[in-house]
Amino acid sequence: MDMNAIMRQAQNMQRQLAKKQKEVEEKEFVVTSNGGAITISIMGSKKVNSIVIDEDLLDDKDMLQDLLTVAINEAIKKVDDEMNKVMNEATGGMRMPGMF
Image (cartoon, rainbow, N blue to C red; front, side):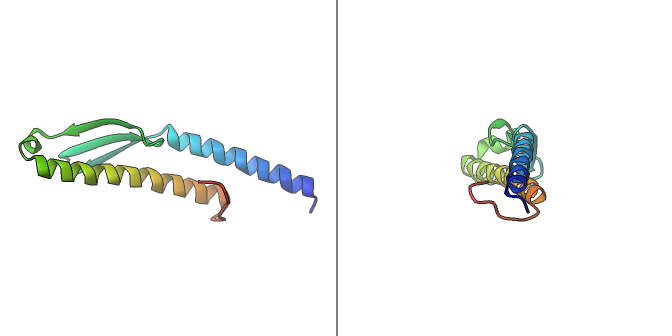
């Protein structure tokens, strides 16, 4: 195969991958935890937009801290899972050095 064709194909795949990554970064993910007691809105860039907490949780600081930790970690995992899915689709499951 022509080396220039391989390079063009790799550059095209890299552009498509960058476009998909940007789409995920601009996507909003919403996670609810503990039966809706906590709702977190996070962007694919992992910037938290908002956290909504049920008033009933405000009386128990320790439980609130634990639930927030779990909910934030779950939101980050959701973003990571989506990014991994996009990466696998774009690369056919092939590991790309230097990429996400």
